[in-house]
Amino acid sequence: MFDLNDCKKQMHETVQAHENELKNIRTGRVSPDILKTIIVGHMDQRCP
Image 1 (cartoon, rainbow, N blue to C red):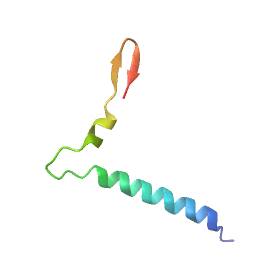
Image 2: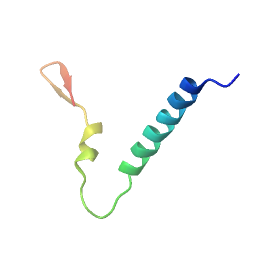
Image 3: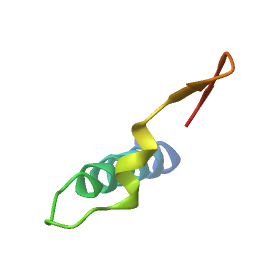
Image 4: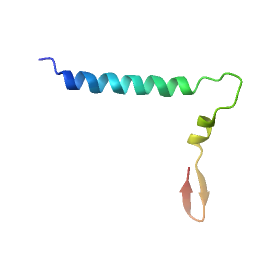
């Protein structure tokens, strides 16, 4: 049987994944999103 809530959840996840992929497109300019994946260790703690 068709579950509308499940369908909405799957569509939302698909849109989020697509938006994340679009953020990785390089346009020749630096984007602040490129720094989100960098983790720095400082005083035995990991900080984004």
